[in-house]
Length: 197
Image 1 (spheres, one colour):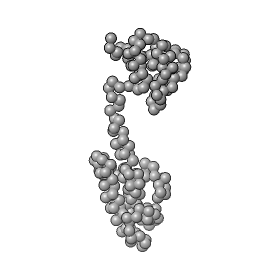
Image 2 (tube, rainbow, N blue to C red):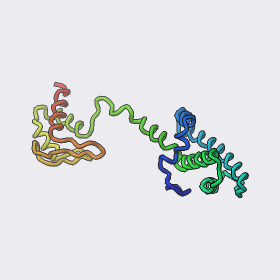
Image 3 (tube, rainbow, N blue to C red):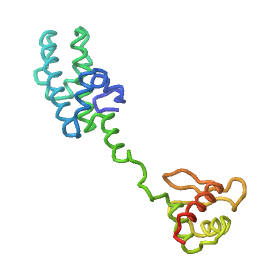
Image 4 (cartoon, rainbow, N blue to C red):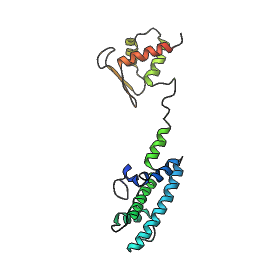
């Protein structure tokens, strides 16, 4: 919920993202600063268009630098033309982008790009890393012995439930997927094969 009133979900960015030309311009922006500079230029253009509409409709608004007054006017434009309504929607989307500090879908894309490569080769989750160290110290241990050792002292963020080989035995990992006993035994076998002999 914006301080300007109304629900500001991704749909509020429709004026920015629904227009192919604007969507292309936003996609070409490599950084948040470039996107925000573009949003500011668009906001100024929309505000000028609405100032003209306000003068035509006799509204008492002289300064569209104040986003609060501009949005209130945008919501009150009953006799506006379709172009003026599009300008009002564009101004609302620009106000939202200013409020959030970015255009949400592009911010999410930029945030996800940091993790797009997935996990680095050779790395693993906490259970796999624990198994790697365990296999180095106990190369001949069975899966049941490894499970019992894990249950006695699990890595940080992990909880072990159930006894080895029993139905429902699993390890929960905070921030990651659970691992059942069968998968645990398979990962142990993989780490045993990778271990130097």
